[in-house]
Image (cartoon, rainbow, N blue to C red; front, side, top):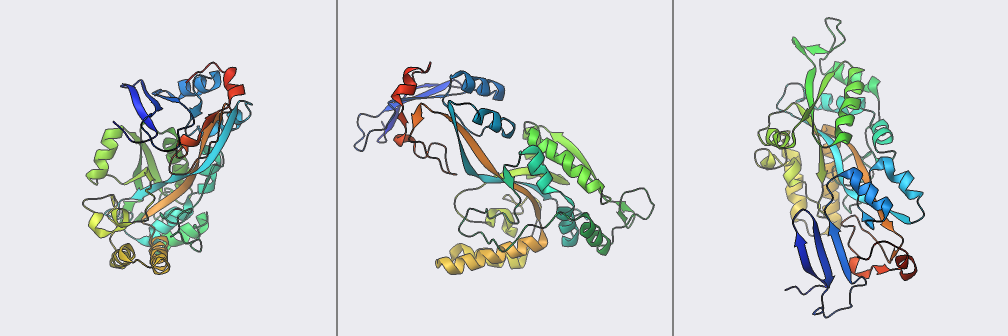
Length: 345
């Protein structure tokens, strides 16, 4: 028994969930009487079903298909700010990454806009901090580091990394600057980004070797802190809180996989989390972003946009970063379009 506008009338595992209007709901009735959520794990099949009219809504259209699908007269494309960002986590326990000058150099050496243009077809943005740009606590004065291989080389040299033997790879105290850059199976985007990062770092004398890891093993290696560096993606909650990501208490049990520990960062995070005055809290969160920008415990590659496709036979659609279906009860079937549609749900 449910008290909301819809009730579940059918559930077939790995196949479909069917919702119908709840006759016991005391508020305004939902606009569409019956909704079917189909489970279609294959991306190619999803796209084919959308174009054939077998489904009416497709979340997170792959970037390479947005322009083509947007040209179809029966579809409307809805763009929202995705609550996620893609990053590189450096293992600060390694001598390679313990110096903040090196981490800044790594960020400066990566052409993040080229990754956005090449892999996201421009549907993303470079950012400076893990507090996302649409959040109230985001500080726009903290700007992303620019792409500057020359400045990266200068910082690496200042940190003692030089190509002493002339083999094209920087070294220090007899150690070459080489490491494994991991990404997970199932994300072609991050696999391809790792290859682009490899090419950029090679230009400043750093040898990064991309390696694709099976998903469960990929996660296990994070938990065991057994990695050099990895490409990952964080999907953020709507609450601003960096404790699980950057606080020293999250090094052993949390998402602070890289082992970043800073007394200054801890102190400001602790103060910001309990501050009830919005303006004071915003100033504290701005301070965390300034520290992050200076120390670069992660290299944030980009934030993304999410494009969702909806058949024109559905009207009244609005979407938020939180959910495609945030206004679902207000959706309506356009009767003229629906009459010619092969889909009745």
